[in-house]
Length: 278
Length: 138
Image (tube, each protein chain N blue to C red):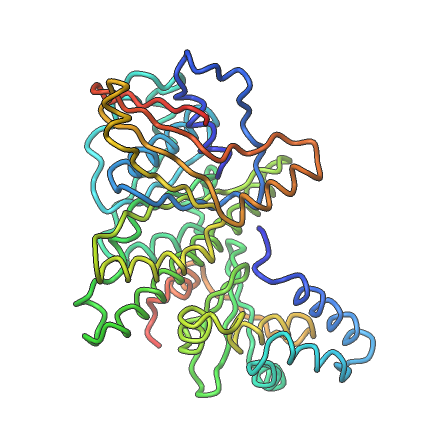
């Protein structure tokens, strides 16, 4: 998954940022599942960028699960994606499950022939995981401990199902072509509020980290930095997790390009996102 | 996909597979190693294997999953490539307390594959989807 994220960041790098030495890391099993953690709105935009980039630049099928219907694409997509066309957008299947049960059913059915023909998806996206996990009043017992336990089990079930589905779809992709292509999974988990919500989110993130090998943290920079640059927003993007450590080890053993671990995202008033390698 | 098992556990299962192929038994040193690596769930998992409690489900699409009959007679559906079990022990000991690598049901799946004791069963693609989603009635 870091190959697609890096491709997104490279595609939307400022022309003046000197990106000639940027390389997209090869697809690696260690980095094929990623979790975006941070602002829900920004995560959604990054996920859309990833989906459209995968469909248009890599020409692969994408399945995009989200709770909220997508009314329009982010401004930077409308104006700047090099290969964006109606044909490439058709490679993305948007699905709007309303509940955790519906989401589980739809992910579980990805193996069925209707979803793998003519080609299986190479990227599965789930936007807003936290919106599907049960809330304080929804997990049966009102006791806080049981609520946290139920959320953790839901998070584990969905994450494991996503990873197992991606493993199966990888087998299908490889059986149908001689390439070593992988099916990647990326999901987003929005930042929690304070108090009880933060505690529940921490427990859920601990569980999610078991299954998602890479974490992509979106952290808003201080307002002075944005003001000084004349921008609307500036964000720090950090890539971490066991998948990044394994990818770094692989790089040491083989002659592969390193996976960049820190980026900055600049958002001017017109909404055209630009990334910069730190 | 990357393995969810530590290297020592993977090696242990390879050793059990090789030895069981040759002798149809698991020697004491490997049993001791199993107990050391997996703790309290090792013996209950071996009991489940002895009772032929593990079934590999396959559907026409090629998708696979494992179903384990627990001690209470309840059926637990586990995944082929990563660790998840709907049992209370997995939720509490593994997820909540982080005190175990896996539950006895997932360990039984690994052991029955190493020892060749897995039953095989075919289901339809739709039945497989229902089982994987966990939305079937118990």
